[in-house]
Length: 493
Image 1 (cartoon, helix red, strand yellow):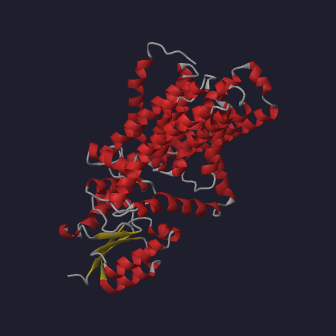
Image 2: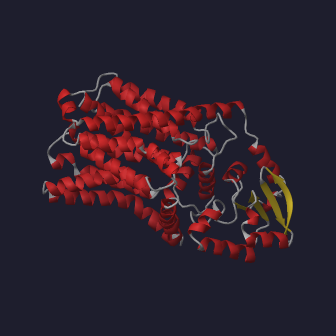
């Protein structure tokens, strides 16, 4: 444990400023530096946040296979400022918390200089996987790092009651609830820490401590779960919420398992190399390293198990950052001691070097297009918003509450401020493939309550037969721009 010095307070000025600068340059979906760039998921979240503030109900007025927390976080951001700036400010708050927690976790074990280096390396992993910013994994980081910080702070004592103080366990449960109700896989690190605590307390026969911690943890979890459950019960949307937050993500995970080629598996493993490194380092140092070996190994194993079989969108792998941080600490602790170095088998050193080399090469290759892609966005202003506005101009003001989009960029709704009139307004083909009932509901809507205006992305109309039939029978094509076609219902007077 490293002692603080009288300059530690500077972190509360420097790290929030660093978070602000980091997001200003690299969060392309919310930064004032990129006013015309909205992204995909982040644009949809922006639209959902606006709908909540206008009285919309998640999963009833809009639908996505995410937990409700992300929608309300965007509503909170928009309550700070009714524009992308509000989301940017929310990101700055959360990123500041993440930077402070990363630094202070490292600071418990290593010097100031090494803690700063750990923060910079974690920042590189974050940047490589940021994908424009404002996504669930980025906003979930503080809820993983806070329990990790508390775990490290109490983890250097041999007394189980002191190591797992029940009065703090509600924080673990609360953060676990936030993660589960955002995206269940994001709770992987806390699952690993929970398994470690459970096994250790049972092994030490500390059943009273285990019971107290379990009760405290459940109280924290209930503080998150119960308000959302009651909200959706009152709004008659609990079933829809369960489908969107849990059932569809489960189908989504199952869909991806059998769809990976060898090349995709290689990209997955390289993306997960920080967690693989954590697993190996934690296992080899399991009897040392301030008792971080087993927690690191189990948390890394949970991350590998939760993310190996899913799709390989880069932002998913932000979730490797907490175990990467622990791996850096354990590696520094291990290889700075001659005795422990000799206890490592030579093959272990070779494997670690191989994994570390793969991580450095792969993540360096990700950083290059990320940094230069930002430069390209700065140099070339996007013309998408002007195209969106040209289509919006075709729709009379009084009819903009009766617009639906099929396979249209969520950025159209986010940038124009129009709220779609039907809850399935994005990613419909994917959702329908996962859950056929969604297509049945869309069919019924088109046949019984067709909207006045329909936006169709690309050539989606040729893949959705009923939509094509309805368009041919009752609509006329008004305009087309940037692969989006706008249709007006001529059968409605």
